[in-house]
Image 1 (cartoon, rainbow, N blue to C red):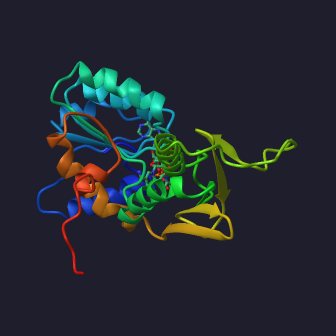
Image 2 (image 1 turned 90 degrees about the vertical axis):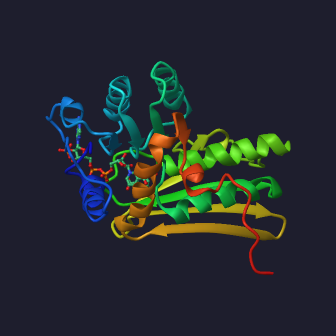
Image 3 (image 1 turned 90 degrees about the horizontal axis):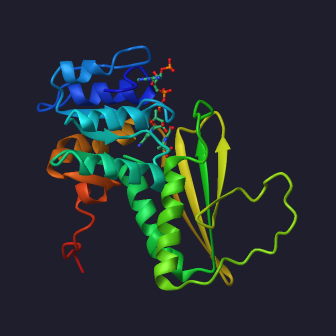
Amino acid sequence: MLGADGRMGSTSAAAIEATDDLEVVARVDVGDELSAVTGADAEVALVFSPPDVAPEQAEWLIGQGVHVVIGTSGFGEERVERLREVAAQHEGVGVLVVPNFSIGAVLMMRFAAVAAPFFESVEVIEMHHPGKVDAPSGTAVRTAELIAQARAEAGSPAIPDATTHDPDGARGASVDGISVHAVRSRGYVASQEVLLGGEGEILALRHDSSTRESFMPGVVAALRGVADRPGVTVGLDAVLGLDRPPAPGPR
Ligand SMILES: NC(=O)C1=CN([C@@H]2O[C@H](COP(=O)(O)OP(=O)(O)OC[C@H]3O[C@@H](n4cnc5c(N)ncnc54)[C@H](OP(=O)(O)O)[C@@H]3O)[C@@H](O)[C@H]2O)C=CC1
Ligand SMILES: O=C(O)C1=N[C@H](C(=O)O)C[C@H](O)C1
């Protein structure tokens, strides 16, 4: 466990200890040696250390043959590509990069990508607790990447926007051409809304995590599944079976 004393580290440790098949064998926080992980013969490292240190730590662990589940935000396409290069040199090591462990958030991202080509306009608004150090959130970045990819594959036209004067960045960050807005306020844990606009209609896809327990089923599933997936996998979809066609349901 990296970032063991933090908000996600401590909540995850409790969830892991509550299972019958997983146990925390090493806890690494600021100032601790990473070699505690290999010293304890950990099979999997769960990374919740801050975004400025997590990439280097993850690469070192892959090099040691440890499977890695990365929960830390900020692993965009460039960092993931670097992980792929490192993992390619260490056959059999599984790396899961999970922008959001909550099942609802995973589905919200998927629904947003499905809906995006059907609307002229799409924007992402994320809301988080004021203790979060990075903006926009990793979930928002991943959502924007998936939306942009879906629109590119569908041949969607550019999103209409007449703005020519925005000296203070009020239109938000542009991630792959999708506007992303970040709110930091007491009262939130992690929320996101994807607004999709067409002529005379708005579809709002909203997800709220009100406690960190919402991430725990995903954390446990990722820890159980990572060793079966050599190489780098982004997102929890494959672990949850969302990459398979749906089973027939009630009609
Ligand atoms: N994928 C997901 O579903 C989720 C991802 N996250 C992401 O997880 C990350 C952590 O979030 P959160 O737990 O809220 O953050 P916290 O700040 O609460 O926890 C991070 C912990 O890491 C410690 N730390 C600092 N440097 C190191 C180091 N070199 N090695 C190991 N640990 C170190 C910090 O210590 P100190 O405070 O003393 O610096 C702190 O205890 C963020 O990137 C966040 O976005 C969060 C929630 C869900
Ligand atoms: O810092 C957080 O709290 C969260 N970080 C992740 C992110 O950046 O998307 C996941 C979730 O939104 C909570």
